[in-house]
Image 1 (cartoon, rainbow, N blue to C red):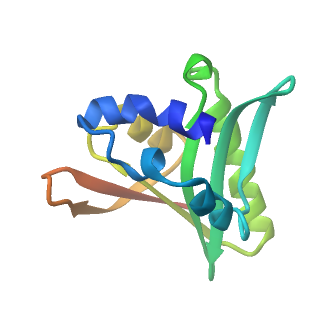
Image 2 (tube, one colour):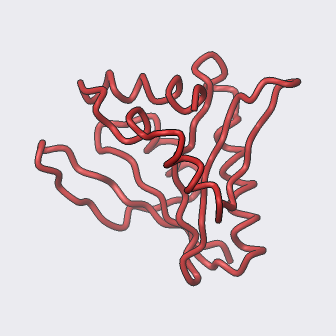
Length: 139
C-alpha cells in the first residue's frame, strides 16, 4: 500500500486530484486483487521498490498498477517489471498484453511505447481527460 500510494502521488499532481483509484483503494481491495495476481515485485535488499499487478482474461494479460518508489524511478525498474510480468503472462497462456494510463501521463506513455506497446483505444472521461489503452503481442 505504501509503495502504491507513494508512486501515484506524482500522477495525482499531474491530474490535479488525489481522488484516483491507486490512492483511494483500501487494503481489502488490494488483497482481493492479489488473489489471482500474476504480478511481480522488485526489491533492493529488503526494501520493495517496485510492483506491478496482472491477471489473465482469456488470452489477454491485463496489466495494472505499475508502481515504482519515487526515489527509484528512472533506473529501469519499470522496464524490468514489465518484462517479467509479460513473461509470466505468456507462460500462463496469454498471447497479448494490455495496460492503460491517463492521457497526461507522458512518462508512462513513453515507457510503454518504448517497450513495444501501441495505442489501441482512447476513452474520454467526464473530466475531459482520456484513458489511453495500449497493447502488445506476447508471441
